[in-house]
Image (cartoon, rainbow, N blue to C red):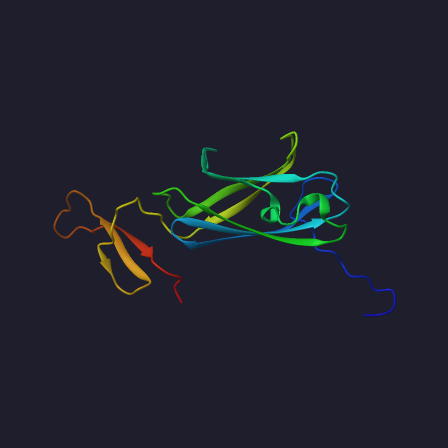
Amino acid sequence: EGAGAQAIAPMPLAVFTPSIALLEAVAAQPNSSALALTLHWQAAAPVPANLLLALRLRDSAGSELAALDAQPTGGIYPTSLWRAGEIIPDTYQFDLPTGLPPGDYPLTLTLYDAATLTPVGAATVPVHLSQWSPGPGTAPAHSFTDALALHSVLLPADVAAGATLNFTARWLALAPLP
């Protein structure tokens, strides 16, 4: 690093307003029925209002699967107090609907003014769900370990002798797998 070298600011994932950019969005599925989301915001300038965040998980057809509206940072550090250049970590966890299969889903993040409910910016980020969420009251067919269970096996109605048997096994992660 020579004289005059400057730090390069991270490229924002999305710019919501001239004052707020989203630097990072990391989604994880801690269990089959929840989505954990970690966001890193950056204030480019003072934010003139308190903003709320709407999170909308949708399927490929655009139908809403899960929703959460909250104040960034849980309201502990309102957006109107964010300082220019500051990076603000923000975390959320919300319930996923039962029966949701693993796959890729769009998650829309919308910032809106808390006083007027007017949207000020939105972005969509991809979310990968790796665990199937079984319906309530469904017990696994067999638990192999404290972390892994076979929920069910779907078999065809009939198979001819000597033919290939195609089936679907639904696994359930009961805890994080090593």
